[in-house]
Length: 230
Image (cartoon, rainbow, N blue to C red; front, side, top):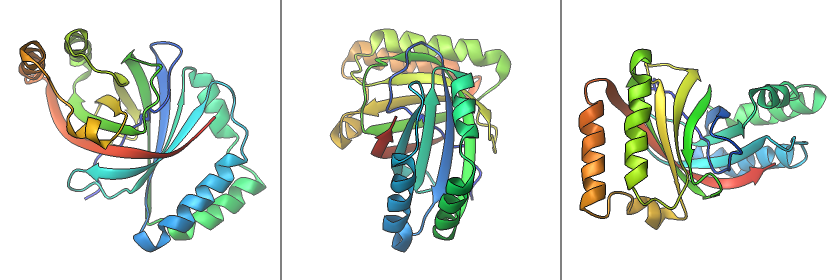
């Protein structure tokens, strides 16, 4: 069942120059026997492609995911400027692009795309190879309250990696509308993520209690960075 919206992201092995950031994700399902050729083909194309100074791409493997999440790789494009991101994506055309697509298409079982905006971020300078996304269903009228409760946690939680939240605007398949995203230095950091003292434990508990009436948790996945392009 491929009914979940996939982030990020996020995407986010990058830093943003402002609170807002715009992202565009391409998630692909690749069978094991095609993985090496697929990754080499993607790297060869984007390594030779010109990126504007404010657009970044992370190419990652999806290592952990919930039931029904079939995709194995994610291409995450990010920019603080929606205009720059849209302009860059429009350059993915022409003969070289067609050649790249013709090489990749036989290696891929399925492709999904989504896009959105980061509305609040912490530790934006951190560039970590491990990223985890949590997806939620939140009604538009409750979005401000969701962001407020997230902010309350981050004001208490001593977290060294990047953390951000925002909205999924395009590519929604099962009602997921908002996300929280965090990055870690390594898998050990991901495995040990969570509150470390009573104050942080209370902050997490208050978040889930406060959002229980209007935010439904939908899915989570963890990606491991292969390479960053900029």
